[in-house]
Length: 243
Image (cartoon, rainbow, N blue to C red):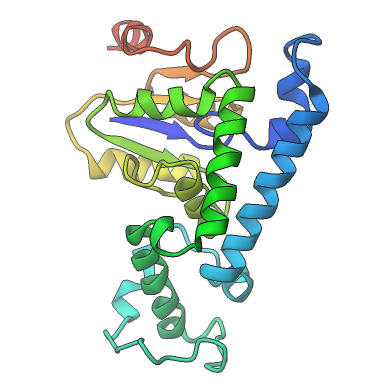
């Protein structure tokens, strides 16, 4: 089981916005271009969160999984349900479960079934420009996922923006999303008994969590060890040391 950190590992955003990605190349990258790409991603993520995934309504009710409230969902037909008038509050988990159900359905449908053609064109252009700017970091990371049978995503970010990022960066068909790293690792261990694990990420949180679990950790950073430099052979070396 391969456990992937999302931000600054499978995708790049904060390092583009803060220019740390470009600065790691010592003048070889256009810093302002990276910042502009990051801002475009940030705006697109927020737009989708608010317009299609109820983020403004449920931001303060962040949950680790989409199905965490499924037991409160009575299966009601929601085709004519008015989500703007049902007075959602923290005490009514059923109303929150309804939103989670719709979000899950949209996630499974994919963005091509949700967005208009103009937005899809903007999205595709942004992905291609970012992939080119980052020397195919995004497409190489995605290709690396396809080499493995079981991939699990962990993130310290909020659930809805994380799901939207998965969709925008073409990860939704390859990875099972979750949230919260240390506790999530224990859940993953229970979920996949009697297998070997490997954690891949860029930060101290996932490194520390991997150490607690005694799992190998592969560190990702812009230079020198980065996508597309990561291969199954490289990961195999980490496995051989720990296992």
